[in-house]
Image 1 (cartoon, one colour):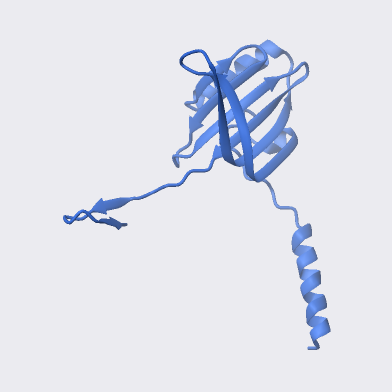
Image 2 (image 1 turned 45 degrees about the vertical axis):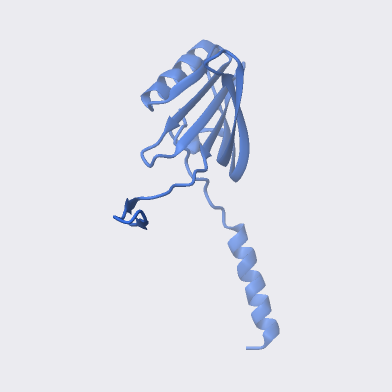
Length: 154
């Protein structure tokens, strides 16, 4: 096959591959259960997101999270009901709620694989915006210590 034909086939295959829609992965924290039920969905595989909440001493803490990030909106029928439904959902996930009022919720949770998730919900008049991040973490191990002080990775 002539080189120009190979180049053309390669270019067509590249365009076809790029045009195939790849669905976003589902976040661990999503009160709707599926991104298909959400609006204005945006996913970024590598992102930096900040979450703000009061620390133990009452001072504002800003947690910067690097990793996968999702943003989506969900319509609701009332701010108070939405805040309560989100809080109930988060508690069911075993999340630690750091901020909870009628306009905002911030929480963190750990999934079954040990990944740390962060979420902020801004409750607006007709919908709420969810900002969810899976914190990128370096996992070391499992390993065993040898009798001579070295480590052997399993």
